Each structure stands twice: as structure tokens, then as C-alpha cells.
Length: 186
Image 1 (cartoon, one colour):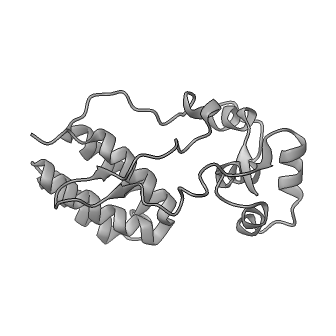
Image 2 (spheres, rainbow, N blue to C red):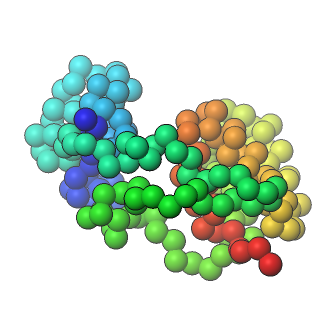
């Protein structure tokens, strides 16, 4: 049984008017529907008081994970060099009642410029503090990238390093976003 966010929790995370403190908000981020109560509690290094409070206040609930079978499958499979292809279709990654409310839906125009800016942002968030030399290396590569193939190669390298730092779930999320941003092959 895994911890899930309620609509109230999603509203709290999306809102600029915060009701919860930083540790409580961290618990909401960790309750991604893939982790169990015990795993989140261990990550928070808490005795369980935070999770009990959030569950009592209606921010979190325990349920079965619709993604449990899908979490082991990679979000993208490598086909040919320079491509990111979706893995075989499966059920949505969010429960059906929340799929339409996802804050990460993208309906913009695909372009190399948008992809480049997203990758710059990832470099700033993931590497600047812990690995400034790597961040500078990626910045230089991104400034020089002019083709879809070069952008995909840099993206793959960044994703591999993100996976080492932040885990496979974070890396899979980035793969999905990059696949949405990249222009189609011509």
C-alpha cells in the first residue's frame, strides 16, 4: 500500500499561499503514489507524526498504486541513436481523476530552443551546487548544440547523471518532458 496525495494536497503544492510548513510540504512531494508509508517516514526521518497529521487533515491517503506494475518498466526505450521513443503504451501514470489536473501537461510548440532552455534549467537545479564543473560543461555543450541529434545526445548524458543523483523516477520524468519538447524528426 502506497501513500497518495489528495486533491487538497495537490492544491497546496500548486498554491503560492502555503498553509503547511516545509517538512509537511516535503512529505507531500514524497507521497508520489509509489512509496509506502514506511518509506516516506524513513526519508523524512520522522517518527510518523507528520504523516499522521497530514492523513488526519486530508492531505494524504493510503491506497493501492495503479502504477505498481508500470513502475518497473522504463518510460522510454532507446531505439536508434538520436531518438527517444515512448515505451509500449500502458495505463496513465496518474489515477484517472487527476490526469486532467496534472500541473505538468504541456501543450506548447516543440522546438530545440524550448528543449535547450529546459535542459539549462535542469543543469541549474541539479548540478550547479554539487558539481559546478559538470554544470559548466553542460552549459557549454548546450550553447553549441544546433541539431536535434546533438540535443538528444546531451539530454541523454544529463539524464544519466540525474538518475545517479536523484533516482530513476526523476530521470523518467525528465525523459518524458524532453520527449514532449523535442521537435519531431524530419
